[in-house]
Image (cartoon, helix red, strand yellow):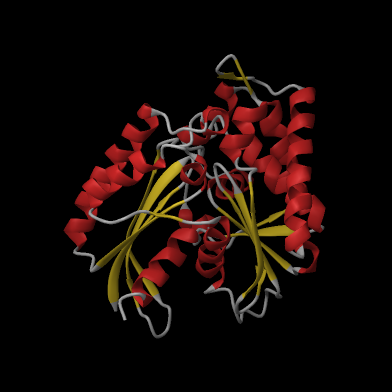
Length: 317
């Protein structure tokens, strides 16, 4: 077993996984998994730059993660940064800060690379299950972008498009610096139009409708599952590999779009950092299900972070 630390720094959150990985079997023994909402992508869609306060929130989380990594004695650390840093003109400030804190060079990966990590993490333990039919469509709804990957034992096609939950919220649901609550029909329609245009782009590369099983990743999807199950607190064990029917996703999405900030914050399983962006994220999920005709989404807690950890272990050979 190889002990690795994987860091996934996205637009909305930064996450850490420390695990022992068997390079021969792909088995992953989780030692520590944690997530911090840092909103690194705050304002990037509008300004093209990472805000100083967003960078400081991210660096504070990195300092905490450095302590955890040292405590566990990880042999290798891999840090992957995704949508927000791809888009930012001042990403060198981010790279320099991470290098100083963690001692590793952050990899600002392409959307295609991000998609491959997500697919590996999500499907490694699904392959061969008799109750799930391939090909799989893995949909990773992040803060700045959403990745679409189709494949079975390997990736057949992948595409990243800019319809993450933070980006859609900032573009369509914010007025004078505050989220409009509840969202107006006009704003919802404009957001839906943006999402549909992005799905057209994705479908030009990825055969979305050929997949037989839809696998949903990341916080928007796992939160929808938690709401669907009526969980009194977020429970990864109950969320992992849960199945949410399309009708329930539609019901939850419509409810979130009609709700106020206070109503969303009162949902027991809602992370405070997702209160403002969950409505947009769930609408992306609903639009994907309607486009593909998927009757349910299989929810996975294993995603890009697990794929990064697995690839980090292989790189030690």
